[in-house]
Image (cartoon, rainbow, N blue to C red; front, side, top):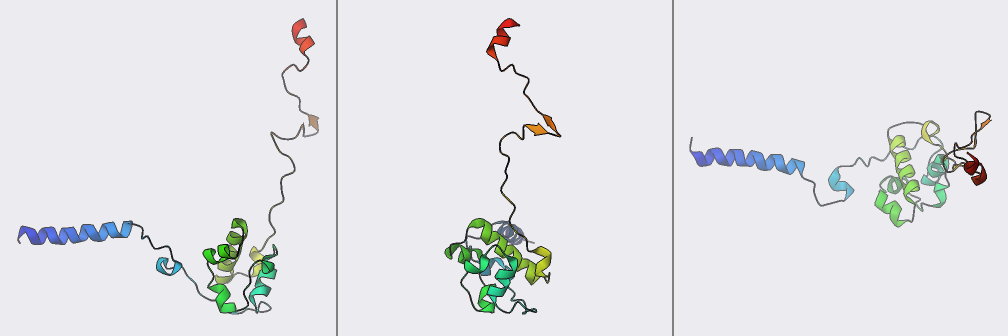
Length: 145
C-alpha cells in the first residue's frame, strides 16, 4: 500500500475525530438538537395561560402567548426578549421540560424560596444561649489585667 493512501485515510480519521470535539459557532436551538416536542393537552391545562398559572410565580402575566404549539416552541432567547428575569426564565423552561416528560404539575411546581431574615455571621442567640465574643469589649478592663 502506498504511503500517501495510508496518510490520507489516517488524516481523514484525525479530521473526523477533531470535528466531533469542536464546538460549532451556531447557537440556534435547531442546530443543537434540543427536543422541542409539543406535549399533548392534558386535563384542565388547555392554554399556555392555564399552564403558566398552574406553575405559579405569576408567570402568566410575563409571557404573552395564546397558541399552545407556539408556546412550546419558545426558547430562552424568546423569553429574554419578552423581558423575563433569569430566575423566571430558568424556572419556566424547567417546568416546561418536566411537563414534556409527563410529570404532573403538582409534582414539580413550587414557590420561590423566601428571603433570608438573618444576615451576617449568624444569630446572637443559638440553642437558647446568648453567644458572646471572646474579646474584651471594655477598654478599662483590658488595662487592669
